[in-house]
Image (cartoon, rainbow, N blue to C red):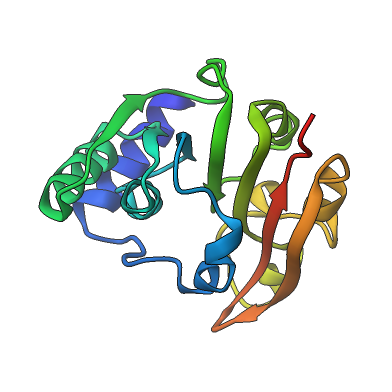
Length: 187
């Protein structure tokens, strides 16, 4: 399965089929989000969130199953004049790189067993930002498949040990998304 996933994402990134630019909805939380420390971009693809975090001042590690996506991320980071580290890995088979992280971004990748691990890898005061398609997305879109969709309020339930700064499920264009900004308490 991992090889098939890698091939699928490599082909998609080669074709240029991926979101670009900063996640504009996060600009409203600029003062709440870290500007120093380590950042982790989960399933980073071509690195738009990695680059955004690096521009904020974070030392970023981008992880993805696709070497093509990671090569695009390194190239885009160099074009932006920021540094990111990258690591090709299969999160269904390999452990998450050791934390703690001041910020973790997880956009458009849902692995139910992973979210508690992400929370555990946050530094005290660390923030997780997430954007995931919900089950309601299937009303208008064939992809992603139901396996990768959040149930209603699932992401907020997964964040019960965090201080939720923002949570919303809504249609954004033609996609139904759950968006989250949550912080780990200072211990």
